[in-house]
Length: 307
Image (cartoon, rainbow, N blue to C red; front, side, top):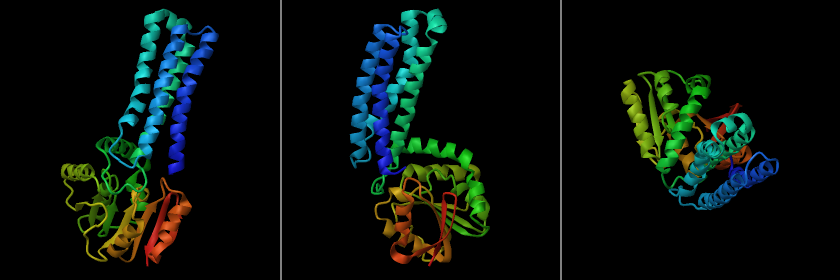
């Protein structure tokens, strides 16, 4: 999801906010709701339009720890979802709602639900704002990211991905931008006691999450690194580098690639994904400095060899 696409999400949020009272008016004309319902729709629409605009301004602001309007953008439709049936039942009675007003009820719930989903995508865009490696992610952003990564692990199967890229027993792996350790933990099992996994992240909560997990599982071959860029590792000490869903958040990308080139062994491999970046932009980044050669692309994973 690149920056332009993120901007469109705010447009969709505001569009839904405009659409909500319009649907209320249509339902009123059709006799499905009373005038009171139209008033509620106008109030909700005006509030969410204002919040959507302010959230967009918050997104464009390069101060990363501001997320108040994004919070409100998610909370308002989340409040509307349970509030809609409560109001309808209070005004019409449960029997009338169940027998006569299920169509507008389902329609209003779907609109509020759609807006809530868009709000979460807005939050995701804020979290993965490009070129923001100078500061750590806000706690709320990390909490959302942790949830997303946990759910993603259920479907993407990090263990299978690691085996498909050829990770072997005894190797040393650097998981750059390790997050909650989705790949670091299974990598530790694959490389075994003879291998080592370095789990690096800029966020202290990410490092703590990995440390908590390896302690719980009794894993001894994972070493955590809290850093914005420098790894602190010796030259040519790593067999494999993972750079999954990270590059878009790095401002000094050339310096990062230089650091990864330094720690990779001769003939070592770097695996990266172009999530949140245009593929052409992604490839142009790796073309600079003549440090890596693209070996192959398998799905969303690019395999680069150290020159």
